[in-house]
Image (cartoon, rainbow, N blue to C red; front, side, top):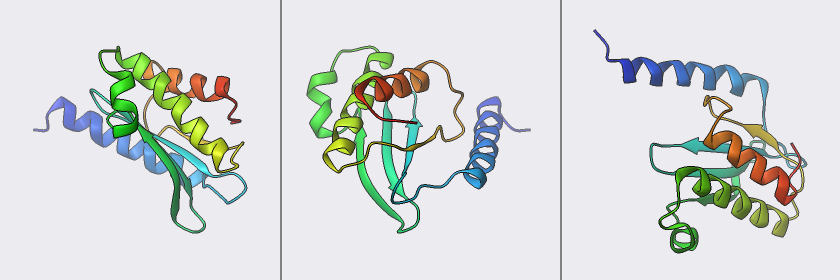
Length: 123
């Protein structure tokens, strides 16, 4: 008998596979991937044509760890959203395709997406 958390994880992976069949990042419009763990959130901007990560930001990375220390998880998500948008703009990326990676568009994932949009990223 499988545990509840294992069933939830398998369901998320199935959703992720369905999503990835439909979306892909290109050089003009790369894919913004978000990953949420129990404590942290990380994001990458990926060009799927060349199989390369253009930029990344995470709440446990050295550059953001000090500024986000002691904040709530939703505030961490907002900080990561602003950071990834700044890095994307520095590389000339203004429009992306959002990949929620099988996570429900609610809570921290939604806060991250809203922070990216407010900072100037289009999706």
